[in-house]
Image (tube, rainbow, N blue to C red):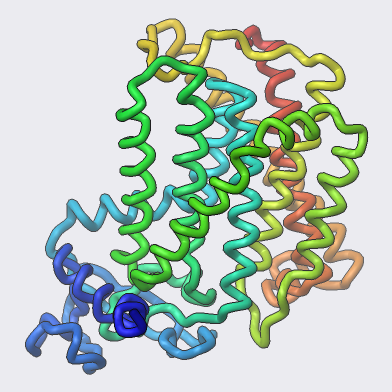
Length: 389
């Protein structure tokens, strides 16, 4: 068992998976046996399909802040674009579009459950990374296609955790409400989470054990949370303490995030997630307390065909809503950073200052709380005014 775990935690299976999908370091293509098990070899200066600026020393116990140039060659562009797209399904661009889309066009209760599960799972995953402090795969032999996340530790893969949580919570929340084949829903959830998991190997960001561990932890949390779904949902909608706890508890968790000897984006990402969930939760509570108008059935209903008129309404709601959400994010980000810059005497573009605890946590929490609140309260009111309900 120890030997198996050691193999799953090593970089060689990741490198072999990349080679099998047509992704090679430029130096390896220039000369050499091509066996990733041979370990480090010189990075060549020959022409490749791409060049990546990535943190040097990425195989050390602590990710380093320095930069190096890593060139790579892509021989199979189908896998390249498939896994690059799949990796984006675990990024902010996916969350800020899919979760609001679910609220506006599918079902409020499904959206609420997904957001709560997503925020709990992601917080546990992010904190676990900085407690365990397991390094990411070595490069070489692994080709790394991302730079930002290389400054974080590896275990568990939060992409794998989020993909498992989002896909299976959506499946569980809809399987008894909508008419579609159980096998189809299960297969869709499995394919979605598998593609995201494999993308973390292809991009060289995680070992096999990181990905398996992330998926299993997420599945375990889903099993533990499922029996309490209805109770949690009821409390979020009806408890008079919900707005206060939705703001105070996440803020306490963010300010008491595990400290590291160097800057890592995990604290900022965690604050973003908890802030968005806090704003959305307050929005859910307000809508329920003041009996806000709910979206009628004119939306996406799994198991039913999408008519042309419904598709127009769905598209109009989404484009209007996401435009307002992005505008709110930009405006609040500028406002909060400007106020914090005035308070702590730093220019808005000072990246080092923005990474300080007293700046990063309030700036990201307030910004994304506004995003969550806008998506659940402001946008529905706008939809009602525009006749898109």
